[in-house]
Image (cartoon, rainbow, N blue to C red):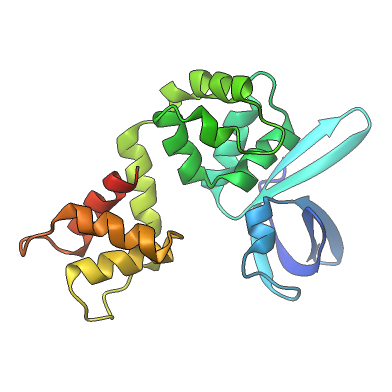
Length: 202
């Protein structure tokens, strides 16, 4: 089993990256969001991988985080969803968004993924809802916040929380509206405001 591949991006293709690792070029299928992210030819990347073997082909799927890889594996265990469907879901929704969609039983959100109908989305929710916990979902979201958040802005707790939400990928409007709903008081620090704001978003 190939746990991960670390190397230099030689080429960005339609649905995959060509990664050079010590003279071997690996074609790794990746989520659309990863292809659209700020990665360029010549960059070094580390991709956590899943090797899918079938009679006529071997395909390597890759993700920036182990969390995404774990979610990909869970999706493959849902009846009716193969690697292509699972990758389509993770191209349409981040791992965090998928967790919250499952927990809120939002089949319509999941069905926006290419090749995933409403019935398949409902089946996915039924099979995965017991594997996710709301507290864990918030903890993972906050862990990403801690990676991108710095207190160097010198702003107040609400301003810092808005900036952290934007850094996590929410629009400025979404971030501002969520923080406004918190009605923060002087006893709340940036992390308190952020935690409360995330609950309003979901």
